[in-house]
Length: 279
Image (cartoon, rainbow, N blue to C red; front, side):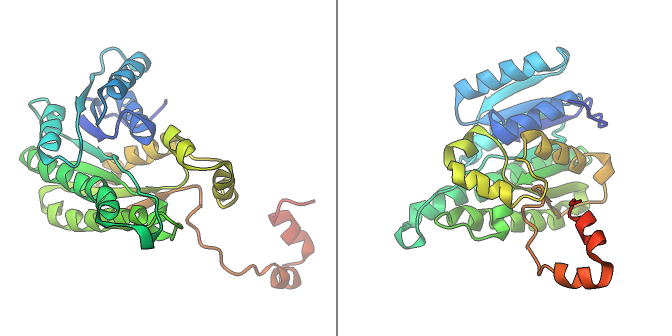
């Protein structure tokens, strides 16, 4: 994976880093020279990801893993300390996330709390324990992975977008509080990303519906999110904080009215047909 970023001598923590988007972010950061710690709740997945990423990376690049349930504050603290490697923690990608599919009328308290604990509290714990280390060492960058669904209304999955909207609000609040310490906090809202977890949760019809609604007609890949993370944690984004970046192939664009009829009257059929790619 080619990149223009150079994160040599920077330490990074990626939660949910053993699979999907998180593993893609870890791979990208490794390719830039960063030392990466991936955190996840299952040791076999962590071990498999480390073996894969180490094989794809420069052997001099350092990668390790830590068992971490992001709803457990002490485990998050320990993961942050390990990722800092006795020095600084320059980059945090808070990617661990989950949903809870059920009709609103059947949801109990636990159905709402499961996504809230992982998505909101997990991100908050990462920020809470990373920020003092970053502050002591002159600053750092945090990227929280949200979802484009935080701006939409998926049926029978309300706890997911509601909790991710909370992540969006947390990004803004943390960015404001931590800016005086040169700590930048931003977020990314992915669209449909082709991962194992997405394939397990989406029917073929749902996938096709996503693709039909995506202006760039392909599914997103973990690298698409990883490259956006690379920008947000780089010096190229040194004046960017508190922002949510949609990385979704245009999926989040709300359709307006189609003025083709009027455009044909003003610009002519040939101009409109050319714009639509028709001969």
